[in-house]
Length: 453
Image (tube, rainbow, N blue to C red):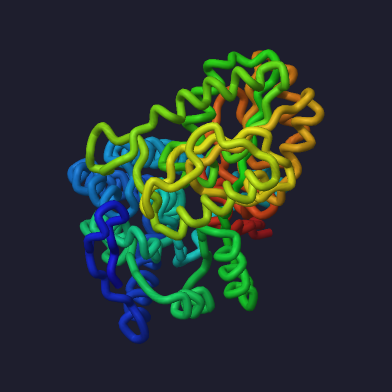
């Protein structure tokens, strides 16, 4: 398997695919490691996990550069991803002993009750390329702290990140605790059906999620799915407009818009509409495309040329339906798609209904809050939604009314590890982060003890 740099087209690395007996041996090693690991106290697991993660501090520049070379994220953003990974890991480490402690219930006469949180076994983590550290860390750290081991299949776009995770845990006993593999879709489906795999965590497309769900359907195991998004923003009449525009544009264009929780459609109160468009145009035209290793670059290449084709298709269909392009809209070359602002987008157009996954911001005016709420909910997705208002009571109305996993007020495109990361509808199921991130990586054991008569 050859990995190519999306900016230069040069080969970054060649990775051999795991298959057959050799792949089974790697799974068996991970299975045996889990049996030893689960016998350790949570505090000892936490100590070893924290020590292993120091690898990423010691090799920070190498890891960041590998991210940029493999998927085109500007180097400054790749470095920032390392910081975000440590924030999430540290919070998860800080709550592990409390969350995983047995829940002791009130005694009854001669009876003692408690609830244990037992590990599942081997967690199969299928990680995506767009945030190649943040996505797997959401699973790896809580899975290990809960007493599981991890079989990590990173995206074919960013396999070196999987290698880095395996190297980080190579010095931790027992050996094989985190095992990185690369394999075919057919072998992946076979692994999901293997009785040694106890849970599957997948981040990727809706179609990929359906395939994982089908592969697991013959077994009674849980599957965590973090899938697509078409995340809306509403700029209310009382919004701090300069603040809202700056954050929304960043939320649409950061990482070239290649984020499941990027802002992908905007509804603006009609009283602010033209001002919003003028401000957003200026900000989007200021992005600098170029070599992602250049510190001055603020927008890197798309991960592959087919993404450029897809975005051009969405824009063309929107323009044909009556939208206006205020900036961007056409490829610079087969690598880059410029930040694109579309005004007056019909609600039923693909650009308002289907995930774009690029630096594309479609906008339309609304007459008020109720219309905005109805249009925000008009989607098969439900990952995040943001409301830009100075009125806390209005924000709470949207909290109650929005069908989504996360509601933001005056913020977007951000995960705080103290909150669960979860989706509704085609955005997936299950939770990572927060105390709830441990729940689907453990099973409840009821302990019911009766004293001898």
